[in-house]
Length: 359
Ligand code: FNR
Image (cartoon, rainbow, N blue to C red; front, side, top):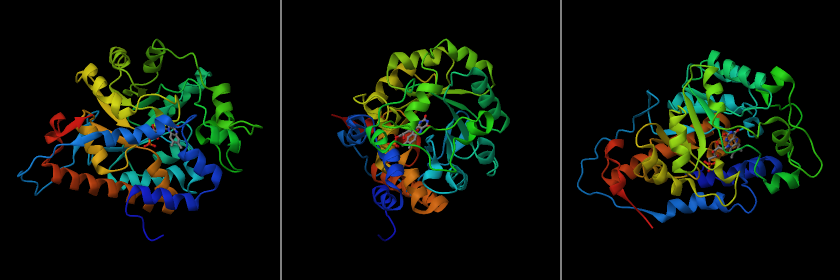
């Protein structure tokens, strides 16, 4: 195929570059993949109401999240095992993020260590945390992330156990020789097991991740570092209110890209209730199904401060490493710029709920 011109073409091309086990792991959702598909469908249900005869000669995409200024309202979602897509994995993603001034959220389960990723210039990075049963290990991860200059802790709250991704079960998903969850292997020798008839990642979660985590544990987590806390995976207004009460400064409205509870509400559908409940007391971000500039516009119109992209980054990585990730970001940036111009919005502050109708 000639150079991809949109994120869907990147996915098609990436499929031809990746071993089946890796492509299936990246692309799949849980069980019947209803939520995975609905994350996309939700964007088609929202219609735009563009304003005409507005001066859109200059489009400004800058915004602020947790006090830091961003060049565009886009961040990179935490995703495990990026070296399955490209040998440089998370380092390539970090370089592309720095060049585009985009925040990268690094997964606990990265295949390059958080310290190695932190060596990539001084980009704005957050650390995503999975709380392990071993509290000492969890504490050490937080301390390492803080010491390495990560600017926020993004606690994933929608994965007390791993969602059942049947393609991974069928493939008996594990990491190929030479790849490890670098943050953990380095510190405590943990690795993704190989298991007959099961996904090794599912087994890892069952063995290592704490399924008994509750709101009360957030006090302990906050005591480990001065980093602001962002909760990722909130889908209800009442949980969002609690998140704020427990001191979260940010919320990522997310269903983990349809990989956890199948049948869960599409993240875009959950957004308005959460924005209303939070009432400006925390920053509300969204991920799940963002593939076009118009998707970003719709999410912002419904109250998100910024969005995160997941899988498209992996498609960019698989196709051409850092260059591919940079191109993914740039495609979305260009599409958002055009969509804003066509909607009569010169600045992000001009995007409000009057721009959309939800059916
Ligand atoms: C993820 N996601 C994820 N989330 C998280 O909090 N920690 C993690 O380690 C991972 N790992 C991961 C791996 C892969 C391969 C995917 C596709 C996703 C979820 C991710 O952060 C995000 O919520 C979704 O990917 C967003 O949806 P889209 O953009 O992929 O549709």
